[in-house]
Structure formats: C-alpha cells, structure tokens
Length: 498
Image (tube, rainbow, N blue to C red; front, side):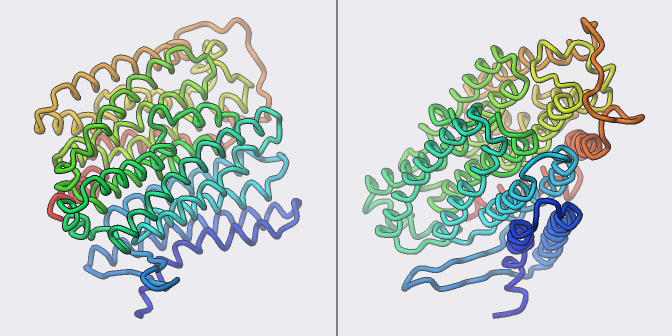
C-alpha cells in the first residue's frame, strides 16, 4: 500500500484525535482545548486541499482494512466525496470559531467540543466511504456523536428533544441496516460506483432490489428530513446555535441527502433506478416536503424553528433533483449541497448572534434589529435573497439548474413546485427582513454581552460575515472554473457516464 493511501485515514483522524484528547482535558484547560479545536479544523482543511490537488493530478487515494471474508472497511477518494468533505471541513472551521465565541463562559465546553469534533469526523467519514458498509458505520457514528450536542443544555426540553432525535435516527438507522444487510445478501459487497453489479441483477431480482432500495431510502430519509420523517429536526432547535448550524448545514441533514445521492447514482445507477421505477416516489415525497416545510415555516414565530422548517423544505431540493433524470438537474442537486449549506449556516449564525447579544429569539421581537446589528442582518438578508432564489446569490443557481433539468426531462410540474416554493420562501423570510430594517422597536434593549465598538463579539461576527460573503460569491462567480457549480457539473456528467 502506498503512503498516499493513508491520507483519507489522516483526514478522518484530524478531527477524531483532537476530539479524543479534548475529552481527556479538565474543564478549565480552555486554551489547550481551543488550540486542539483550531489545529484539527485547520489540519482537516489542509489535508483535504492536498488530496484534492492530488486528485486533480490523477492520483488515487484509498485505504482498505479487511474485517471479515468479503467484508472490509474502505475509504476511497472520488470527486463527489471530496465535494462533500470540502464543504464539511470549511464550514466546520468557521463553526468552530463561532462556537468558541458563543460558548465563552458556558458549561460543559469540554464535552461539547469533543463531540463537536466527533460529529465532523463522522461527516467526513461518510464523504470518504468507499462502500456501503463503511458508509453505514459512519452514518450511525454520526447519530451517536450528535446526541450529546442536542441535549447540551441539560434542560428538560433539551432532554426530550434528544429523546425524540434518537427515536427517529436510531429507527431510521435500523431500517437502513436491514437494507444494507439485504443488499449484501443479494449482491455481495458493493463498492460505490460498481453499479454494474445491481444492473446484472435487475432483470433477475427486480422485486427484491425494489424493496431493498426503499428500505435504504427510508433510513436515509430520516436524516434528510423528508416528510413524514422530519419531525426530529424542528424539535432539535433547542440545541445551541452552533449545533443548529452544524445539524442544518454541515452534518446530519447533509449526510442523509448525500446518502440518497450515493444510493441512486453509485449503488443502483440511473438506468436501473429508471428501469425499476424507483425515482417517482422519491420525487413525489420530495416535492411534497418542499411545499409542506414552507407552509409550516409561515406559522413559526420562533426564529430558529422558522429556519428549521425552511431546512426541511430547502433540503428536499436535493432529493428532487436526484429524482429527475438528467445532467442539469443532477448538477443542481449536487451544488445545492454547498449552496444550501453556506446560506443556511449564515442564517443560524445570525439568529444566534441576535439571541446571544440581545436575547431575542422570536421574530416578533426583531423590530429594528437591522439598525443595531447591520452587518449580521445585512448578510442574513443576502442569504434570504438566495433562499428565495434571487440572483446573483447562490440559491438562484441551484433553482435555475433544477428548473432547467426539469424542463429538459419534460417534468414541467417540478417548475411549478419550484415557483411555488420561491413564493412561499418570500412569504416567510421577507417579513423578517422588513421587521429588521423598516420597523421601529418598541423599546431599546441593552446588549446582554460586552460588545465594545462592534455590534457583537468578534468571534460571533466574523464567521457570519465570511459565510454571507461565500453565499454571494458562489452565485456571482458560478461560471468560473473551480466554482461549486463547475465541480457539480463535472460530477453530474461523470455520474451519467457510469
């Protein structure tokens, strides 16, 4: 095995090792904890950039550890996995900075940052998994590592939310496990990209393969928050803002959506999925979830819950794009992994800044907040325009390609779903923008924190500005080589050549 074959393993350990060391520290060793956090986050970004550069030069990276006959733990680098790993690593670095400022003076920071690191370890492992078995291992590790973050505050509400989270995710994991085992029995060990294995069985065992597909899809749909398996997500908003950002933009929901992409493209393949008519139910449930999540968001006064139902809606664009066959729709779905992530993390950072600085957690309390926190609400407004689908923000690019793909495939009803969703996005987001910038506050509240000359603490302000700029840049520079869109198009074109 070449030395370069250990690089995927090093990427995993760049967060696993700091998390383990942090768990061993005393609570008062904050300087060392911060160093380990930042060192791990920067190292992961650097390692992924190194591997990405090597991949572009034609180098191959993989790690195989035999577990049993015909069963192996496999890490493998491909363009789709690197795309997701890059998103996870960059946003983890930004969220780490934010969390350090957010939790300053808080309790149980040692436990929080340890499991915070374990969570991104699982997300990176999911991205770099080379086969279904390895994917499942990291998928369940993600469930276990995220639970302590959801219940971090220790309140009755947090504990109940954590219990609900476990019921959903462990239930989904059990169903996914049944699908993985059944797939192994029918088709043997399958590595991602070996779609010819399923293709050879499609005419022999179509019923079995259909049942296995929907077992695995159901297990993945829990974390992807597809209706009616989405109930854990709004309840989990009791967690601190950095956790909410992690859940919605980097880890859990993205793991489910990424898994659906893998299942359709890299396990079954487009031809078999169409032959067995597996994508129509996915399209229907995704479309319903898009509208349902938006309608529920309309009636939420809690800031983070409105954002949570928005995630339920926006995330299903990915599943809908996967269900519409064609390069354009697939590119729209894949690029939305990144676009939704950077826009939604901006929104949760902004909501956290408002709550931590002034104590406002409800939308009805936000009158005039834009004048007191112009930078925070300025980038929030940019993200809002992106979520609605207005150019030149990143969200417009995603919706444009999904719409083009729908027209290309003759699925004109999808265009109506996208237009209806954009109208609903405007209906539940623009009132927040209007309140923030154009309404007079009933009274001037004093900041809860010492903020100096800035509108809030620097470690809370810098991350939201960075992700807000990225939300705009991803749209403005979408046509350039190396942009998320250009990479997503390359991935989609390769998937349709499999």
